[in-house]
Image (tube, rainbow, N blue to C red; front, side, top):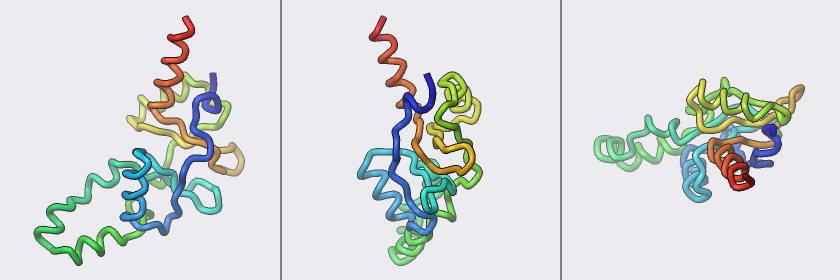
Length: 139
C-alpha cells in the first residue's frame, strides 16, 4: 500500500497571500486541520491548526481591541505557515508515511510529484486510520 492508495487527492489549497481569517474560516467550514499552501499547484508550505495556536484572539480583542484583531487576521498565511514541509511521493510506502507522521509529530503530509513538487494529494493520520480499519474489516 502506498501514499497514493490512502491520500485525499486534489486537496483544498490556499495561496500564500490568503489571509489568516480566510484560512481559519476554510478550516472550520470544511472541518480540516491542515491546508497546503500552493503557488500555481506547486507546494509552498503547509498551515495547520497548530499554526493558529499563537493567535490569542481573546487577549488581542480584550487588550488591543477589535481593530487590532482585524489587522491580525488580515495578515497573509505566509507569515504563519511552515515552509520547510516534510512531503511524500505518491509511491511512498504506507509504512514510511506512518514513520514520518510519528517521527515528526505531524498530522498530515502533502503528497507531491518528485521532480516538480506539484501537489497531488495529502495523507493525514485520519486517512491512515481509515486504511487500517479497512484492512482489519477484510480479515
